[in-house]
Image (cartoon, rainbow, N blue to C red; front, side):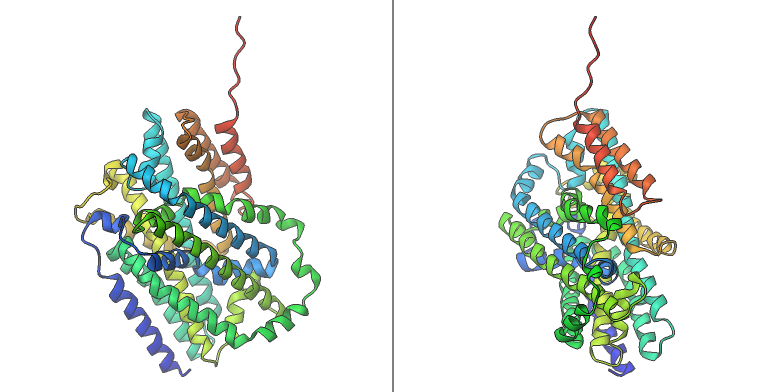
Amino acid sequence: MPTFGFAALATAYFLSVLIIGLRGPRTFVAYTTNPGRTGFLRLTLSLLATIVGGGMFLATAQLGFESAAIPIALGTSYLAGNVILGMLAPAIRVMLTSRSAGSLFELFDSLYPGDSRRRLGRLFESCSLLVFFLMLAGQYVAIATFVRHFWGLGPTAAVAVGSVAVAGLSIVVYSVSGGLSRDLAVDSLQLGCIVIAVSAIAFSVGPTTVVNSLRALPPSAFVLESSLATFFIGALLFAAPSFLVRFDLWQRIVTARSDRVARDSFFAAGVGSLLFFAFFGFLGLYGRAQGAQSPPLAGLEVLETLQGSIAYPIAVLGFAAAVMSSADTFLGVAGLAAYRIVQGPSSLAGGEAGPVPVGLRLSVLLVGAASIGLALLFQDIVDLFSAAFGVLIAFLPALAGGLREHRSPTRALASAGVGVGVVLLLAVWIPREAFLPGAIVSAAIYFLPERRGRSG
């Protein structure tokens, strides 16, 4: 496709996104949770769009380059996580209503009595801010990686770099204006672009070429190395439980039009996520077969081979759409957590029909700007996401114990706090494996029986 045609296609896409995204909601509740308003198709597309971010083109392809087993394990765990949340969705909706909680933040506030309740809730809000800030920064790492790789490779590559850079700025613009209700609407367009891009890549490369290339790989490419064993176990067993403490997924349960819509949408998204993980995992493995030298760039090196074909601009826009489809959700949650930390628990009152506070929009803007800066300090998107999921897992014992009425405020706070501390400390040296000791420590603190002193 000529450079002018590529630029026109990119312009049309970004204008469409901005037109949809800038029609911001008028009420606080529509901006944050949009309860009971979303049907099956839009909710399913939004769930998939949130999962299929820039990390698919980079992190999942990188993992596929390293071992074909890990993306399949991740996809399987995401399928399980979606099925679990789908099955629990009706009960979660009833539980939130019965506790007058509009979100997962408020649920944490209601689980433990006494002063520790707010301390635990504040800790969860702070860690949610950290988690989604890291995952948002991961999307900007993807943008930075793309720009560095394609910089100076010719006029068409220059348009590609410009398009992806515009995507990074657009995320903040329409997220500040639109909130969750516009996020859901934009996700439908973005996932459509991603599906078209995946189809274009598959058609351009061709299944026969892929099969022949994979056959030429040594057997070691399909065998899990011992150095990846802990990460493989984590991908298979711990990604699914982390769904239970992800604010963005609870948002989707709340916004579903009915219990059935929530359940069916999560089921459908689970199947779709497994397919996407498999595709991008094998894309990375194909890049290895084609001679890619750097695992983090394996997916981009495959895109580079498409230059000169109609598939190239479509794949680039698909990458931009993938980055935007995840980043807008992560930015919305991180901005909301930051606002709630500053304003207190009343800032997210369930069913509030007042206008969207200026402070909330400002929080989203500042978090978005800060995440762009953080992205400049990191090179590996896999490390960012691994640390983020490890922090989430540390809160699972407190949530599970609180829901089962096994309530110990002191233990809950210690469990989550020490677990998060272990993850963040070890993430400096072993970012991919830090989740495991963090999960073990948080579970042990909460659930191990107390030692009783001897009576005289």
